[in-house]
Image (cartoon, rainbow, N blue to C red):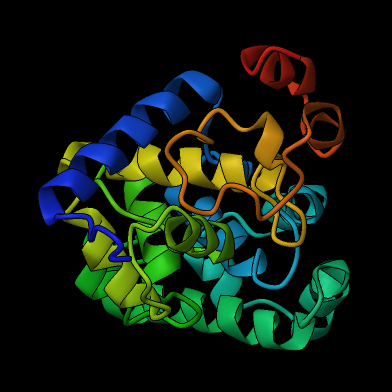
Length: 243
């Protein structure tokens, strides 16, 4: 028995159909890190490594009240900053990144965060993922954010088998219009946090189940799957699949 291989055109059509469904499934999708300026978003994204957005949002009000500008970060007292950042984990490395970020911005960019991917990734603590978060949400420049949720979902969806985040970014980017990249990232991340969990996805309560080649990775029984849904819109998500 031969298994039909999905053509590039069929993959693109399926991927875009899945995105349309995700748009309806998660109308509230957005960046879940709290910020008011591009610098605050860059800092919050750096802090989000190896911890949750919820934890970061509990930590940043104190941080942002004390450090408002690149100059503030550049001249920060290391011990004071480490104390503030300790709840986020890896606080010494994160303190190094934030002080280094402030110093680099002051020395090379007049204290302002640059607007291009090429310049952003030269800054301490900022890789492609963080740069794309900043570009898409602070500067309205489309970008794909390949975090752990995004990578897991695109592989489960069969959009790519690649593990390398940069390759994933480019391959998935080719499936969608550039204008959709930022919101596509938010919707996949929302779906990964609320429905398509790493260990036990809520397959039976997923709006994408008819289009997902990984359907059955988690429980397909509707009541069992509904119990796995998370977030503030659990009842709405359940209603979408007839629960």
